[in-house]
Structures are given as C-alpha cells and as structure tokens.
Image 1: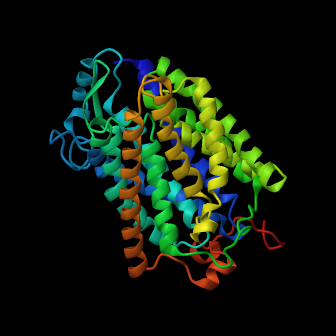
Image 2: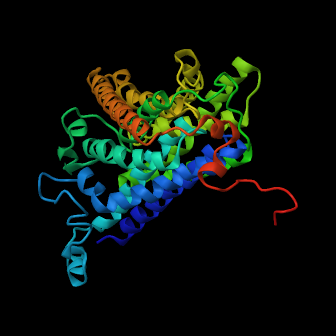
Image 3: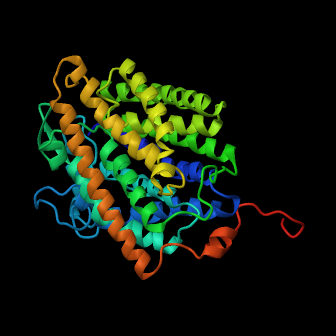
Length: 422
C-alpha cells in the first residue's frame, strides 16, 4: 500500500468536496438578496443527500463490475462488508500492489464528483424552486442519470495502458474524458436546460434581470472553485505523477486564458470588463479543460481556455434568443464549455488530434459521447422535473418569488439589519 498515493487521493477528495460550498458562494452572490439562503441551500442539500445515496447504492451502480458486486452498497449491502472490518481490512491492504491505495479512498473521491454534479444544476432554476421538490428531483436524477453515466465514463480497467473493460462510452466509443467533461459538465448542463424549460421563466425575465447582489461573495466562490478544481483534475490521475502535474498546470493556465477571453468579449460587446465576467470566464475555462487536462500540451490548453472563455461569453445570450430562463448560465458555461473541451481533444489532443495528423476518428467519437450524455441527461431531467412539478409542485408561488423566497422556504434571511437584530 502506497501511503503517498493514499494521501494524494484523500487530499484531492477533500479539495473537490470544497467545490460544493464554493459553488454555493458563487451562485449565492449572483441571485437576489432575498434568495441567497435558498440558493445556497440547493448546493448544501445536494451535499447531504447525494453523500448518503452514494454510500447506500450510488457507488455500487457507478462502479459495478459485471455482477462481482452487489447492486446496493459499497461492495456489500448498505456499505457493510467484512473486507472493510477489523483485521480483514489490514490483510487486504497489506496484499495490495505497490502504488495502490485503499478502495474506500477512491469511493470517497468519486463521491465528491457526484455531489458537485448535482449541485451544478441548481443554478439554472435560481430564485424560483422549492427546496423539498429540488431534493426529490436531485435524488431521482442522481439515481437514474448520474450514477449510470458515471459508470459509462469513469468505470474502466486499465492493463498496460489500454482499457480492457469499462463503461460503453469510454470502452466501446473510446471517448477521452479525463476528469468529467461529459459525466459532470455536459450532464449537469443538459439537466439544467431541461429544468429551466420545466419551471419556466422568472417574472420580468429579460436582459439585465440577473444583477448580482453581492459581487465579493461570487468572487469568493470562484476562488474556492478554482482551488478545489486542482483536486478535481489532477486528482483524477489518482496518483501523484507526471500526468497529474500536466493536469495541474493546465488547470492553472486554461482558466486564466479563459478569463481573458471572456472579458475581451465583454469589452467589445458592452464597453466594460466586469469582475463577474472575469469570474465566469475562469469557471468556463475550468469546465473546458476538465476532460482534456491530461492530454493537452500547455500551449494547446491556453488556446482552449481563450476559445472557451470567448464562446461561453457569447453563449450565455442563447437563453434570450431561444427563450429559456437559465438563471445563472449553467447552459452557457457548463454545457457549452463541456462540449467545447470534449471536442477540442479530437483536434489537438496528444496522439489523437486531427490537427496533429491523427485523423478525425477521435473527434467523431468525442462528439458521439458528448451527444449521448446530453440527450440522456436532458430527457431524464425533463421527465423527472415534469413529474415533480405535476405532483408536488416544483416552483414557488408567484408572490413568494417576487418577494424573495428565503423567509418563505427556510424562515431565514441572509442579511439581517435593524435595531431588533444583534
């Protein structure tokens, strides 16, 4: 058992977990002052619910291996297995090959991916969603959509550097997705689009409706997201080695370039480069580099960052042109950014890119994989969201939405002022 790799996997898992509170800050700063608690609770609710479901059955679905595991729990029923109890665990770890790490370290690492993916969706329905309805949707969507998609993309076995067994997207199509461009970002972005359609537009929906109430809060969220993303991307190597180092430097440079790409577009379109634009650009670059962070040389990573920042800055206006209300640009940043990064591999990926002389086969496979996840997630989220809306109701009452939903849904205020407050 390699203690260094064990420590690396556990540390990166903690970094990725930090991304969900970071997302809560990022989203929370961009909504109305009277909707902050509600917005942040959608992320924290995801953390609580998906963290439990992952241990009970999520991991078993995402990483089932042809019947060698039961379908419920971590290698057993509801997480109970003698391999992880007392002396048996010590014997198992002692017999593990050099460089290996405990299975539960990987379970923990992948749990944080499931949590952040579900939380990302919530930005599309800001200011108008019931918390209880969101929790019902999140649990069903994770079970029916995320866990199976994670199996398609993340569940594979390597031998001599080649995939010999795994989910159909990574094994049969040969899609390259190092850290989750398809399983996380396209998946969440497509679901966000579906929910935005199901819940409908906010009252007064038009350009300029989303005015961040607290810019510093949003920028704090960007900082926490970027910090945690080093664990997200470099940690996906599950080893402290050269590939993790490449992923790390690309996770630094691509978002920096994307930030510049976004604010250049802002300057051309509106005459001003905003701090929210800079932060959104950094997130767009982080999204785009996620699937490609290990297979792009840093110079190509910079190019991807600039393109992603510029394209996502343009894509956020699609909601006005097409008439769907994606409150916090989950579609424009995560869906578009995830697609750009996934396809970019087929053009400039090391050893596979068409622009580097390796033909267009990989590009076509990347497109197939991205399209499959997009379609599956959109249809799944739309059906689940519609069922929730038609049964218990997904959207708050009109008067509550206009007034701000924090006190109605949670009985709390983000900011308390006045002589009666301590």
